[in-house]
Image (tube, rainbow over the protein chains, first blue to last red):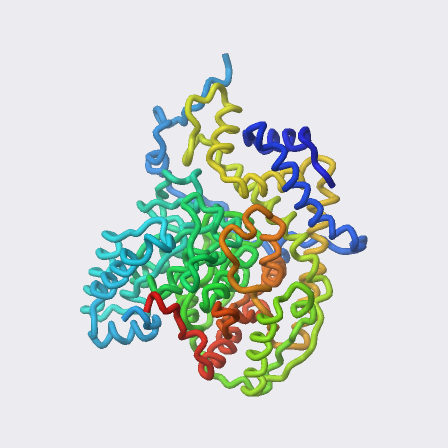
Length: 95
Length: 484
């Protein structure tokens, strides 16, 4: 699989990462090389193989549905300057 | 003092040969003397360390002692530490002071150990040479022209130069075992789920596991005794009894069945490294072990499958870094999308961006089956190979890395060649098995590591197998001349 300039720009947009125009060809090349490595998998027939999502996929530990966390909003918000009245500040979204 | 193991230092503290404060000061002095050149620490927490040391001395005076009380340790900068900067090797977190402790850190604090500082690492643990760190590369104390391996390169270099008696690391595809091999240390990656991931900044959640760098297997057991166990805060930590990992160290190895996968000794393995590893296996025969030839027929697919699964999980995990709640935020964003894109574009380094983009692509509409689902099926085949092998053998052995430490810059412009550094370690993570690297000799004066892979939750046996070898060899006691 070879990715071109448009592919890289589309992927970067999906990933919400800005990339300088001058860096696009470099990413196109390195990402294409990685995909070529990955496509060695295609040589294997996996028709009837059950996918493995997780090393311990057989179980999921459950707990009672009760509140276990105390509210630490002020403590957690101390690590950023972009807070006002308990809310995080971002650029205006709705006019 | 600096060349002692944890077990020896614990004896010294107990007998009153030195206090924890004296011990901590001596390591802090060594860090000041050597680390400007090595760059193995991102943060040295001197005041915090001395306060912990004094508290440990006070506790010991009252008789409140665990084996690790007063022992100085270095922590990988991937573990959140309340009030002390946690960067994960990234500009994204250069200003991040975690508001809580990771479970691993909490457990070491409870045990009374002392944190000397936070060690350098590849950015978000993505790398095999420590060169992707925002804080610069780390030098391998055995030859400062070469890399220490990665991603836990700082943790490995710090212990190799004896700037700390031991350290923690994390291993997603080999990030403990490979640097342990390249720096001549004993590295342990436990079974997936053995150690809590709470507060350990996530890279690939189905693969990440915390472990240790030590001089000896005996010390690794002491560390694992503290770190292991069920944690309600990590739903993937396993509810399984934690044995005393030191209890079986002295068992003899008569009748131990060691599997040698032919795929780990084929093309791509440096001939000198192969020879050193074969000599180590010959030593095991002398100890009474039986050698069994085995095959892991899908192991050549582990790197390809990993480079879909790990990036896919990373693209999801790292979406939390959006410039809003913590971490790097770009200047004067013109709208919300600009805030996301430029905060991420400016805050992440090249390798992290590459992996996020590969993962994003693999999970995007129309490609899921061809990449992610396919990789999960290959993961099953790789895991099944190990299940079959462990029906015949007790442990599996081979080289940890196909070569000794390489020169800085040699692979940094060629991601695929860098990825192949982990060709023998990645399969273990895909299956979730425990693995170790043990120093077993030298090639061109650089350390070589023997990899030992065990069955699920069989860390006690791994540590026993490593410890017995360390009773009859002295590779693990050797350290680079310049730091003696």
